[in-house]
Figure 1 (cartoon, rainbow, N blue to C red):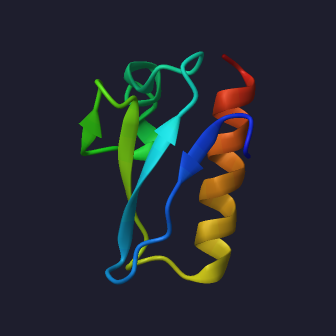
Figure 2 (tube, rainbow, N blue to C red):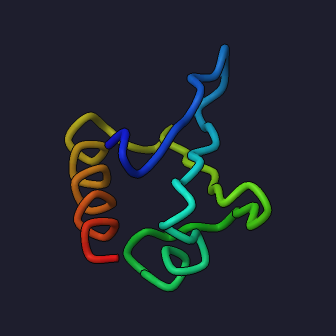
Length: 73
């Protein structure tokens, strides 16, 4: 998903910030209810991605859904 996003793996914790490329405004993603984005930073064009409650399959589904959403921009 490198054309769409960048991120730094956290040294700890179960969440990290995903920064979107400029052509993909975070304000558009927050309108998609299936993504349940609760924390954003519009200056950085980023959102907080928490994964503590997800298993591997749920993570795959979420990443696939996010990619599909970004493909539609």
